[in-house]
Image 1 (cartoon, rainbow, N blue to C red):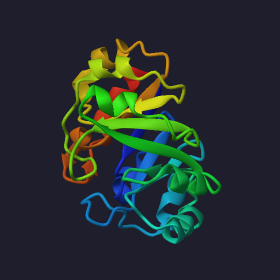
Image 2 (cartoon, rainbow, N blue to C red):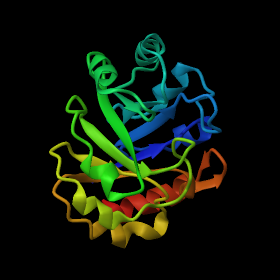
Image 3 (cartoon, one colour):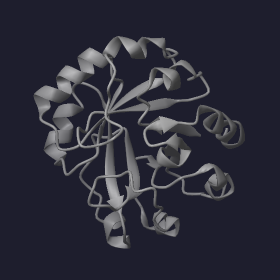
Image 4 (tube, rainbow, N blue to C red):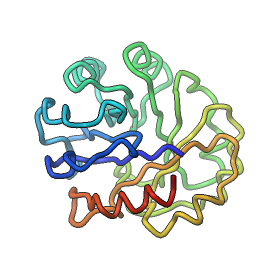
Length: 201
């Protein structure tokens, strides 16, 4: 079970990351309250086993390549309306997680042309590209027939471990957690995350 924590942006949070966590999301979307505020060197405290995922929304290619180099990104998460051709270009520089915002069956059955991605990430539909703290109807996942493994996002909280354990889709690989594990906006409760990891792993 892959667990990714998105929006880690304080030195205090980074200092408490251990190797039971698989991925952290570095948010480079400027309008977000969770946008990266630290210099790249601050992330060197992370265990080498924890993969760094840069989160971008409709960003230009030059900026993405620069952040890959500067922050040592293992993955680029394309969280906007990026085309398949754009995703293929990004995949030449880092592994790609392509996000799809889900509100209906049609949102899942229409996914066909993003085979460059290492993972898909299914998030709750919102006009603001994530961060809603709301879940979509997980029963819709049964309509996904693709062969790209996916991570589940959108309003996942500490009390969802039982529901997550019941997901039986063959392409389900893990979860992306964020706002419901915060003690205040953009500040993660690392003890809460550790307890979640102990159960979900």
